[in-house]
Figure 1: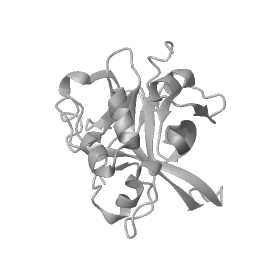
Figure 2: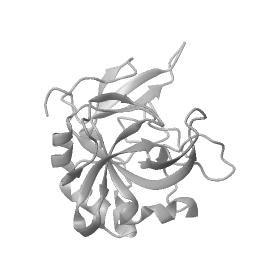
Figure 3: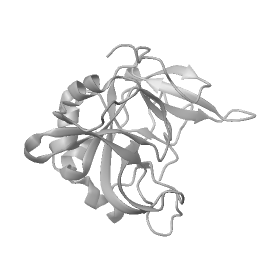
Length: 220
């Protein structure tokens, strides 16, 4: 489990998300901009419905960890060959996780500094290649045991833009309609070919220092 991308932003409106992901159903209600999504937050994802339809809905970020690996939610997955993850790689358990930027922490002193990455300064929409599952259990003691829908997304090796800040890994990012369709619909061995770094010229650093990224939210 790489320690990668535990903070991202989604500042475009839900109509823009629906159009980008070609979602025909929407159960999110009035979805506000989210300039900072942290682990265990509820955030929008797009999942498959029956007969090729897609639904924009809210799920909670972080899978339960594999046995003997503590209690922290798993926000991103790299070892997709593990039996623990393999069952969730079928199309019915895949999701698109819309985002406009994501953050990695630079190892600066006296404290680590968030560095934000986006496709460009205008923060166009993209999606992380994600998976989801139902789960019943306790996420926070005050909430007690509940039924949850949980998501995580795939990670891969860092490209040349991310590596100077976070050399271990980066999220798997989808930007093209055909990539989105492949991730949602193709057999696992085909879909997993998308588990590769975004090209170096497709990503840029857009902000430093803040734990939220509010830019890019005015355009739908």
